[in-house]
Image: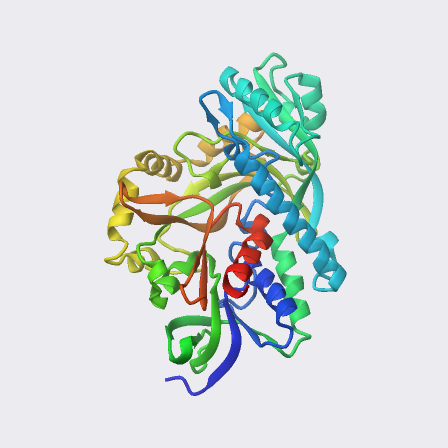
Length: 450
């Protein structure tokens, strides 16, 4: 039994980019209020925000072909333009944080890097050219270039053209000013700033065991000390549930009616990591390809130059895997425990109506190392097995919502759920998530406090 009760005006669950962003916004809006952040791991930003657990791309529509679907011969740029606007809002926010001292060294968080799209085959080349013409006059995309010329593409991405037939049917688009973003570094620096403030408390190794709404609409949260110490409680006027893959069971425990019917399906990620420094130095861009039909948006193939912990890296992937965990550091019982009477039909319906996705996941899990290397050679023809190894990336939970027609449907992207009394909010979903964190948290502030 808990032996003490703490108090806070705001409790934020999860120590990732979303909670860090919201904490800044709350701190600026209510500078005298008490903010408590609960993180179940010994360190912040160890799940989705950690650099090895995401692509690090400043997702802004430059190169993500799934943001510009083609319908009836027309390229729909609505999603790409919306996400570009949101990313640049996040970019401006991070610069604001640097000016205010919340972020001490922005150069460790952001690196300018070209963003390229790459396709092969006549149909895909035609699609990419059509996309280029649809986007080149739009804000944020006016510097985009398109080419099928071998020598031009070799200048943009020399590693990818090395060993490739000069007459191959391939094409690229290129935007010089994109970004490689270390979201974990942003979070680390923001929480370093929080240490100086008495009204912002970070509780590490503090897992939310249960919560309930009590008198006057406040929330009483049961917290387990992961170090083996005594459990404790915290009473708050407002709760933000930003626990990443762990948000779903917390939402279910809250009992808010807006959370009924939600389910989740976990998908893990694997990357090929280059181990040869000479090869790593030859590639300095983020290059995205076209997703295979039936694959989730988070599985768009890309060859990424990264800067992680001060070291340049080169990754290819992601390859989907399967685990019943909702978090990389979670429990294998996460998925079965999440199945309730109010979401079982949603989950069954989503599975039935997304059989291509199920087939894709089965195929991905069955891939051998040689299979993955063969896929890498579509991007980098001269890739050698000895220069690459498989690394495990982050865990994502695909949202499943109830749907009258299909019983349940997969919901891609991110979704904010806010209780009717505006005292509890939850963020579910994945990509482009972190890149649009400021816009999402600004929405939470507006709908909860304005």
